[in-house]
Amino acid sequence: MLRYTFKRLISLIISLAIASVVIFMVIEVAPGDPASFMLGMNAQPETLAALRSELGLDASKVERYISWVSGMAVGDFGTSYTYRTPVSQMIGERLWVSLPLSLYALTLSTLVAFPAGIYAASRRGQAGDIGVMGATQLGVAVPNFWFAMMLVLIFAINLRWFSAGGFVGWDKGVFAGLHGLTLPAIALALPQAAILARVMRSSLLDVMGEDFIRTARAKGLTARQALWRHGLRNALIPVLTIIGLQFSFLLAGSIIIEQVFYLPGLGRLVFQSISARDLIVVESVVMLLVFSVIVVNFIVDLAYAAVDPRLRSRS
Image (cartoon, rainbow, N blue to C red; front, side, top):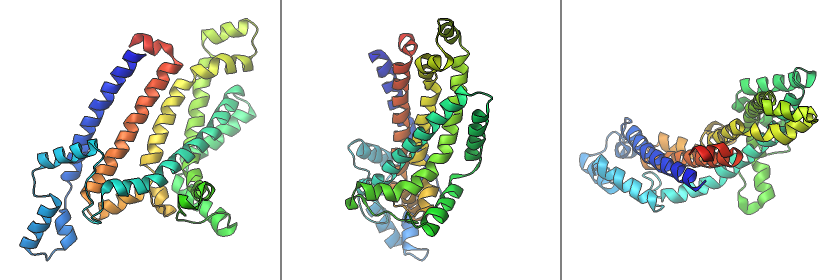
């Protein structure tokens, strides 16, 4: 297990290094100069040059890349061009919205998808299976921002059970914070739950056709007992993959939902920074999101090894 973990850790470090180069190059070659954007089209050349020097934009791209990466290694993401505020402070404030929202949505997605997928697999071809698959097909087809608008219309405007937007802050209490994130979390969770339920069903059906399941049935186990004792654990590997990818998507791809509910999260920060050509913020937030994706995949790889010992023996 230690050797397996070490190999995955080396892969993680290499992936982060490549990702940092790609992110920096892609954002730096984007058209538009932050200093020109901040001063306007009629700015004097001397003023423009002074601002570029102040922001560090007059240095070479290699120097700027090394400065950016070395700063991130010690937790210094630089200073925002627009707000003149440490980027780490801005990210920290927004992360306390986006991270709980993603975890909340992932929890809801898993709590819905696991029972639905297991129920459908245990009743293959029956009315319950058809009903669950029909509901998941609808969940996959309908975009989450439409779910978000319907939730606002029903539960915020008509029933007035939730706020239509904004975030009260965690200083009001955990319950108040979770209450404010409930509608966005449901809007994010429903499509992901549909995908996860379908994967869970398919994986279970594949496993239930294996020889070791037939052997277990021949020894006297019922289909339900074979599913819970032997089938479920072996069906978890593809499901873990989807859960890891879903968390990464929920953390990095919730910009539309944050716009709908006007949440001060990382998605809105990226959107605002792109509009203001605040490159250092965009680079740092995107790198942080890529880091989260790679780390989640690393954890999923370790979970694979815990679930399937064959992976450890082959490494």
